[in-house]
Length: 148
Image 1 (cartoon, one colour):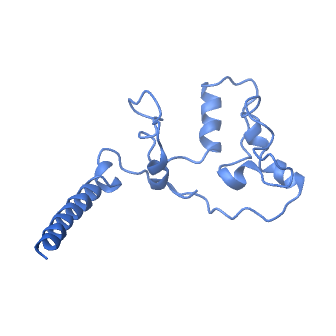
Image 2 (cartoon, helix red, strand yellow):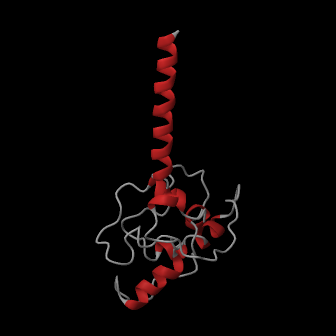
């Protein structure tokens, strides 16, 4: 009986220590340096069950004006999926790569900013500030972003 009580005491102490460590490592404590930007996202709607090819194209045309040779017309291998880029990724497919603009030019960057869903934590993503590279493992960072 005494061994069981001792074991229970050790387990209780270990669980408490682990819980405390998890709470200290949570995003609310870990992200003290960067606060989320207050962004007013447009309302998002669910992807439609079906739509015409014209509707699919309209939801992808601006995207493929920049995402060209490195990407396929659709991300879906099956021809039975009729979704435009913004059905899943969000953003504004009505924004096009300005004719004659080069990557990282002011017109290009302005169109890129307007067309993509903007992150709440741009510095953590390596998009602003002194960060030289993007984070390698972004799983928990995605959880801190808005659903859009």
